[in-house]
Length: 518
Figure (cartoon, helix red, strand yellow):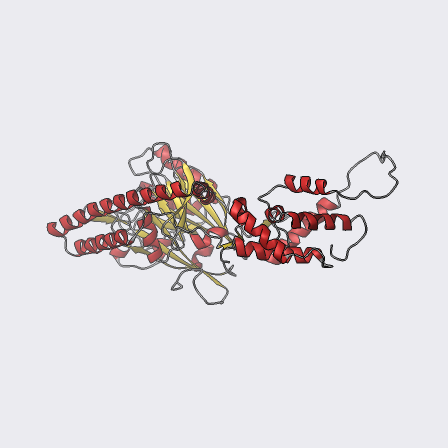
């Protein structure tokens, strides 16, 4: 496993190294940031969660700025159970599909340069549930797994609430012979599902000590019920499957994947000019004055001179944004909270080593103190945020826009589906798909009756008037993307008389056949 995870490694050896995990967190209520920090510390890129206990379904960012994860979850109306998938922020742009089958099964699909990885998250019914519910769960798992393409790398992870046992016992190729305990009915269902879908239970193919296999511990007893399932042909890409102890009853199950794939290097945030500042009277006046100083309408190349002038004026007056949010989603996180949680973890480890009543009481007292520290931090930050909203009412709109963006399932993947139905990832192949699409729609023949009627126009060409230019500029829509020049509608309308003069010159040049600057 790469020391720093997938995207932080500096080698260009053409290999994809991803660390995936599965974790039954018991509940994400009040511990989302702590879970994210633990995953960052363990260098996990993608984590399947069970028992998130969030109502409904959706997506949102979690964690501290610079160390965030995006969560997609699928719950129910009661707010019990539920599954979710956490993806490191650096990988969110590679996600191309999210499927929520139920509150027990969901799927995400990640696209890399030359391949697709499908991750299915499952939360199996407990042993006391009805057999119909268990059969329904594996039917849902099967339907999601069957969507996997021929060349896709697929994994299924989660808490299956079954014991597959220590020995193979007829499940050669599925069970690796390194399990724990005795097999039960739920474990047999899991093995039958794997056998039918040509999967193997990856946990049982790695030799570990007995205590390092246990994924669930309570009351001094431990067992193995959290598993990683992978296609038998892809098992060779798994370098290790291990269990990491923690404070929760369920332990973190981590799998290191190493496969020959060409990486996509993540680009940083795109800088944008803050043209929205031109709505302010003071900024608009400063911009218009600066454009008047920089633009000369008497030069031969009017457009180039105008373009350079408005872009320079916009940079000086409005500035540029960094293209990323200024604050993390966990707005209440501070040094006091960080230190309290670190101390709580330290006391928990001491209690695990020395199981005394004194250590247990100290740990529980610290656990309660952490809850109070978090509540106080949240209350203080809410009051501070309300004060900021009083000073800047427009801030609420920016926050809502940012929250809406974070809540989208898919931000857009770097792939395109061609006419043959296959996904194309490289820049060359995406360009080819675009070319084929444009050639198809531009060369399409439409039926018409060959009859056209229009009045003959004779005489000199009418010149465009100033009133027409002003009316057209007033009706231009704002908030649109800039073209190759980088000039936006907001810049043209805010440039005042200079902008009107340049637009008139350009409009007159076209009918007169002058193209020296058009």
